[in-house]
Structures are given as C-alpha cells and as structure tokens.
Image (cartoon, rainbow, N blue to C red; front, side, top):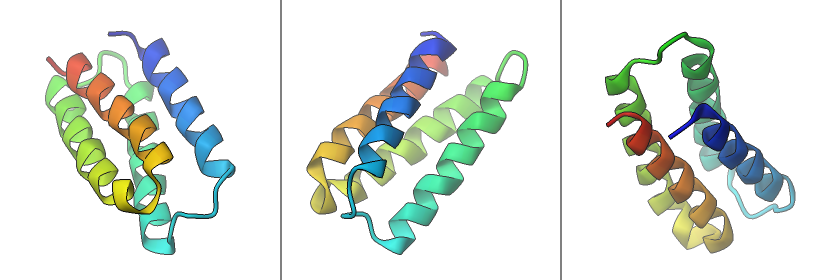
Length: 89
C-alpha cells in the first residue's frame, strides 16, 4: 500500500468534509488532529509500522462515530483507516 493511495484517500475525505455541515465541533476537532497526525507520519522517512496501525485503529474508531452523523463521510474515513492498517502490516 503506497503513501500515494493514502494521500488520495485524505484528499477525497477532505473534499467530502468541505461539502457538508453535518460534522459537529467535537468530531471536526478529532478529524483535524487525526489529519495532522497522518501528515506528520507521512513526513517521516520510513514510517513506523506500529504508528501506522495505531492511526488505522483510531481512524476506524472515528469512522464508527461518524457513521451515525454522516454515512457518506464514514465510508471515506473507513477507507482511510483500512489503508493505514494495510500499510502498517
């Protein structure tokens, strides 16, 4: 799994997020922190596999919270989490 696929998934998720107002303040902050953590990890050369898995788990947990509020955003976040998990394997 390449970082290019991860970057594309992030870009798609941001596109969906910018087109909706269904995300509450708490969830928006969690997504912002997750985004920053992913970008920090991508900036490192040879990302830590445990960190990738941890971010994947966090992303999937966040997607479960998002499912109730905004199902169309949840699928993008779930995809992102799965990519992170595959990269951490």
